[in-house]
Image (cartoon, rainbow, N blue to C red; front, side, top):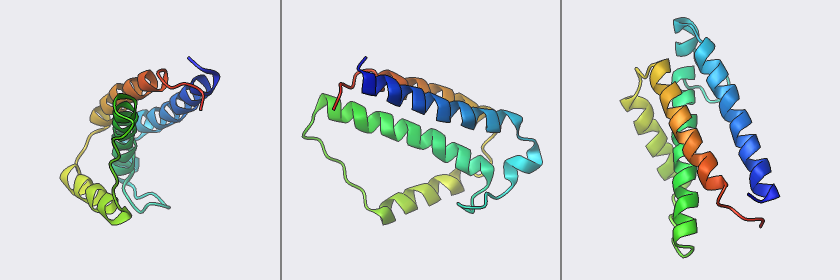
Length: 118
């Protein structure tokens, strides 16, 4: 693994570990509390982090497989995707988010290892 990929992998792992720490220590009240900046419940914010981790993995994998592949979404499209996911998963549990963070985090760390120095 290149030096840049090693550093990026460490930083991703650190952020995911922080998120896992928050999720695992949330009681029911805190899990449903609305965050200050995003105005989403902590449950949905944590789910969003897990989802974004998967999306970043997919984008990097796609680029490594086919550098000409360019999927472009507008901010409005991303906002709608996020809002839909938040509505669909309003009752997500900490256990579900923990499983997604661990699964998606491992996949992202794996694909980062395939990156060279850029």
